[in-house]
Image 1 (cartoon, rainbow, N blue to C red):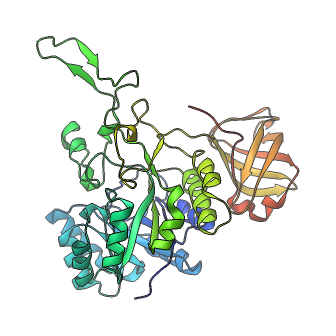
Image 2: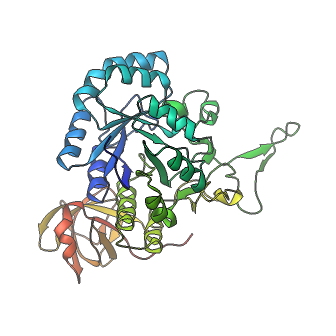
Image 3: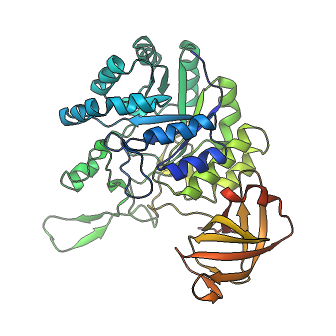
Amino acid sequence: MNFVKNELLMPAGSIEKMKYAYAYGADAVYLGLVDFSLRALRKGELIDETNLKTAVDIANKLNKKLYCTLNIFAYDKDIKKLYETLDIIKDAKPHALIISDFGIYNVIKNNLKDIDIHISTQTNTLNSEAVKFWRDMGASRVILARELSYNQIAQIRKNVPDIELEIFIHGAQCMGYSGRCLLSDYMTKGERQANQGNCAQACRWSYKLLEETRPNEYFEIIQDDKGSHIMSTKDLCLVNHIKKLCDLGIDSFKVEGRTKSLYYVSAAAKAYRMLIDGKIDSNTAFEELKKVGNRGYTEGFFMENNNSTSYSYDISKGLAGADFLGIVQKRINDNEYEVLIKNKILLNDEIQIITPNYSTIARVIKITHNKKGETDTANTNDIINLKFECDNNTWEKEFDFALLRTTGMKEF
């Protein structure tokens, strides 16, 4: 077995996000195959039977890896569909398949012998003996449960040195045990089944209390003055512990977020890549990670002090310290670029341009609409030509992956 070392594993909900994840520093991505993934996406260039091979070919050309998730809890109808999809998976040959269901494991193990199997965090793997079980079953990697502490992870690594271990280091957490939750199923009357890839995130909803003898009187459930999101966990962030996890011999560091934006994937990948490579310290990386959407950060169970402060009582939707403003599409001429606008930009706005290796502050000195001509405003979802004025143009070496965001840091 060829073990990886300190792999940065990023989410890729679409082929576009996959390309940006690689560009911004991911060694590998994980993406869900439609019908078998725990994240049912609704937009973008989704990964299905028609383009899985295309995605793998892109990864191979870049000398990167691609892991495909087949981690739903499967019914017989899902197993039937899987048998119908085996030839497509075999032809595409992803570098590994991420599996949680024993039935899916059995089908893959018996029919796709040349593809590595990674055991999903959904299996709640919490101890050394469980890791040994999966190793002896032929798995090449185990993704440990997020409920483990550093000391428990260290003990597993010591006890089972001959299999790859992967842990989550960043992203949204689930109030259910390792994601095993039926709340969405019940609250949507079975229409949004969490373990079939369609979670409604009912834990993020705002709840009110109804006393049964007062049917029309609703009372907000509050903790002090913080609101009613009593089940909404903060996001995991282990940025301060990456060095000791590298020293411990953890093979792969995983960031959650297949349904997150292209900006989230890119900016988070860049922060962790530069941290792992020793180009920035953990404080600098943390400041960068505050600029992507989050519900507040926590270290969860990692330092054995998970408590009520790990929950986000006042918000359920992630907020970012910087607004994502646009995606550079192509160069028009000197300092002028076609941009897909994600949030409104005004003439003379000061913005930040980021690329995989560079960043700079720039001022928007010209906005041109392809039909209206020059204008003072670039509106969301428009494709607009922007001309920049900036002191440092080194970012132009990587303009094909350049993103725009606001400067500074918003406080919440």
